[in-house]
Amino acid sequence: MTTIERVYIGMGSNLADPAEQLREALKALAQLPHTSLSGASCFYVSDSLLAGQPRYTNAVAALDTTLEPLELLDALQAIENDQGRKRLERWGPRTLDLDILLFGDRVIDLPRLKVPHYHMQARAFVLYPLAELAPGITLADGRKLDELLAACPFEGLERI
Image (cartoon, rainbow, N blue to C red; front, side, top):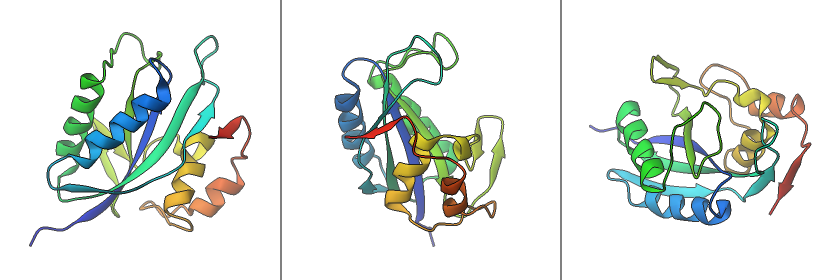
């Protein structure tokens, strides 16, 4: 029997009409095989982590999927590419960034994929949208979202 797993995807864009990039990404996520889009947070605007870049628009999407983690990662990277993502510099400006934040109750440590997503505990633009979709969740590594939120203030975020 194939297991359906709840997966949370962090979404971000700071180029080429970022809110529209996220709307298009949600449409593409809804079309993934063996996957259904079960929810999306509000959009949030935040400053870039690197000085001099345009502000980001971020959200989190919830998927129910039977895809394996690397299959989903490949599909997400294809969506990024379809929406004009160019990987010219690490953490550079981008039309679209799709990150697997949580994958069911799995802890994944592969060269291409780390889940729960590294540094999410320090990123308000990830935690607050995630809390809209999964309030009170405990991450697969045992950390509680409520505790992560308490340690990561809602500073620099604008809900749109």
